[in-house]
Length: 394
Ligand SMILES: C[C@H](O)[C@H](O)CC(=O)C(=O)O
Ligand SMILES: [Mg+2]
Image (cartoon, rainbow, N blue to C red; front, side):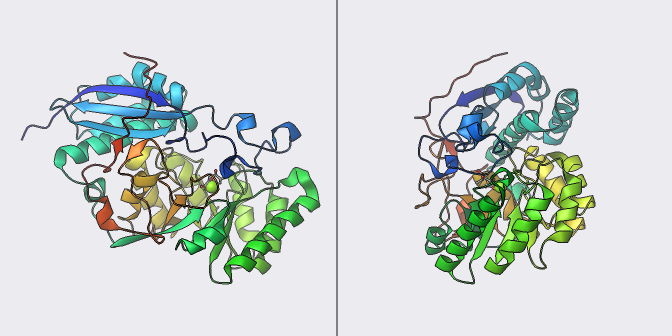
């Protein structure tokens, strides 16, 4: 069989949820007061939209093969990402065979090194990479997990991220991760309030349900250590992204200073095998949390995961819906998955990338059968009701 080639790549933007899950309306829990690196400025403390968390929006990348098959991927990169795809990356994609994923990745990464390496450029490369895997799966009529070696278990288990772990427990999740509300600028009084919130949640869920704090890069080593020590009495399972992503030294110190049994996790804002190598070799954490839409896509996540395996470190990807699930189900060092509660009050399960995708599977009773992921590619479709814009062409 002659392998189809890639005829065209197209980049679109869309607003309101989707891959940019922070791009939500008023009153959503995800835009309530949450401790961030900007919380030291009172003007930017009460919501994350106030400092521009939702400025990027979603990037949708489509790749069309010579036989007419279309694959797509979505990520958080908006119009900047669309520019990079159309004006720069397209040359490495069009005309290549649909199986040339490794070569395309290598060329995209090295051609953007002079302005890339991490951040929005890697989000964009990830979006292209996800579209290529989706295309290859559709052409081979196989799910992406089969292309990655196949499932190592029959079902996925999920913890929930949101404001209401107590409700997540009733919905069957194995744990609940809450956003930390108060940061170091709010002093000891804020620290006490954080611990009181944890104590209250522990009271509601009982002893056996996992509770975690997501600190979203907002603490310093001293505060994170005191938070972890105070949280021990309330059975905190892990402290997530306590420090800014570049503070590898701080993470290494934090991992040594948290109470025995408490895990340190991080990595959702890290990218590539080289970034994760720092976290792993410096002994920064117990679980790495790459986001497959931000770390370099599936092609890079497989390498990051192999590196983590050799360091006896678990890989539990951040968010990213089906793009995570197809990976998690194929890896023994990825024992459970995250589900982000995107209902405004975190009181029901709605698809994570709502309303952008159709056929997006969701956990039922905190679980998902692997067979739910058996459709070709990533098994999802773009919702035709979404208003896509194509700001650039090439
Ligand atoms: C809840 C967190 O602040 C953030 O919005 C999501 C995240 O970091 C996570 O799911 O992990
Ligand atoms: Mg997080």
